[in-house]
Image (tube, rainbow, N blue to C red):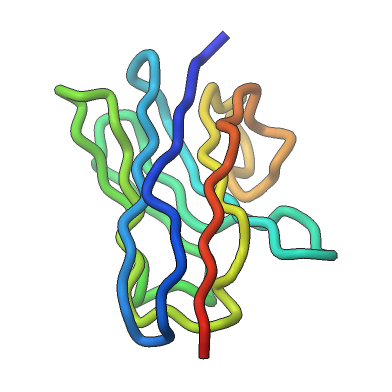
Length: 120
């Protein structure tokens, strides 16, 4: 079982930035998802184990950046120009089965989630 621990959430005003971290127990292809109240969990960003490839959901392209430090087994999500609609619990996911990286069921392991709240 892959262990994942997220941190870095909080309350910010619209237009500001936050950086989320996800510490893993090893080196994996990893992703960030988010879940807003009353909505399904949705894909945000994906990064391969070596950091060579990254993919983003359309709503966050150009504002969010996923990166990793493999010396620390940690993946980051830098979130800039935050909007109220970015408010959600953010989850990191790992142990990717392969296939469509945007699907929740392609990941075997999840972190506990970290709350991000963006005020207008």
